[in-house]
Image 1 (tube, rainbow, N blue to C red):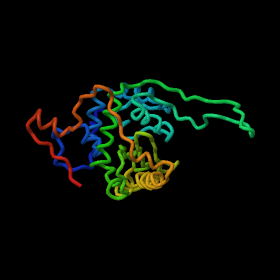
Image 2 (cartoon, one colour):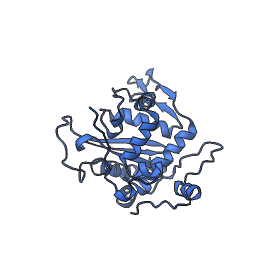
Image 3 (cartoon, rainbow, N blue to C red):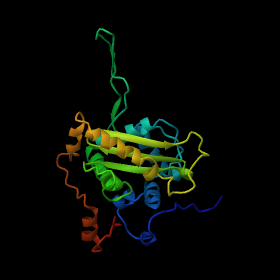
Length: 255
């Protein structure tokens, strides 16, 4: 209908129109950065890679899909994020791996579907980007409020009209997802003050992780580290790269 669609930003206006890094854009959940990326590769290309990463729900290939316009399940999201932790290999979540009778005899075993979707190098880069969200982005309260010091990444998410809040957390040995919302999408928060993933879903993840790492059977996870692939030599300090290439120090939002 010849109208212009523009994604809105809830971040500081002083950054609008300025050169920023993808790591900063992801950490701050700036929608216009996602819109720019979508324009470079096309919505259909994004849908194609999502489907290879286990998203089986219908996704309309439109530019606004990065705003959460499609209905997805927690199982699909956990499987997709697991691709980054599993070094580029998608592994479909499996609820039952073995069935035994009451005497311990194995009746049946099950193995998950796996598929190499992206390179190990790209997967490691994604874990670095996701760690930025926890270090100085929308999930920084996992450090400040919930005192989680282990290596982890994550992503907050808020769907249209503040109807659903998401948080996806990744660790070297674990991927966990939290969805909060209503089956009836007409029920939603009025604004972002409470109706965002950082306020709706992230606290659930924070409490879950506190209890998990306090359990002696899982506390070893706190020492796990993301492993760089052999020969990896890409500079992960985006600020350093910007300073060297442009001679213009990139200033991140402070917390």
